[in-house]
Image (cartoon, helix red, strand yellow):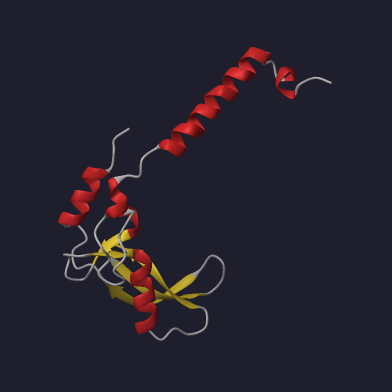
Length: 135
């Protein structure tokens, strides 16, 4: 019975070289030290550290970071949501209450401004960006 890798035009030497390379990649991934971002600033709502800059926003004052999920949870508790309604991010620091009409259509019932000026660069965001290693 033929080796499937050989039938694809690869020699046994190429296959073993490929396996060694994959093993090396796995080993490097396991031994990679935790990044400093893991000890980022604390969320102003839940108090847990923010590990992912892309999942955080400014609080309404613009000074403290907040988890995106914490904002959605807080707004869901404040707003009275009906059947087929949910809180979604609309962009530019705004959330909204939307009613899902079908799989492709929805209706915005209410716009909720959250970040006063999403264009401003917060100190916590700039510090976290500096911790991200360049490739």
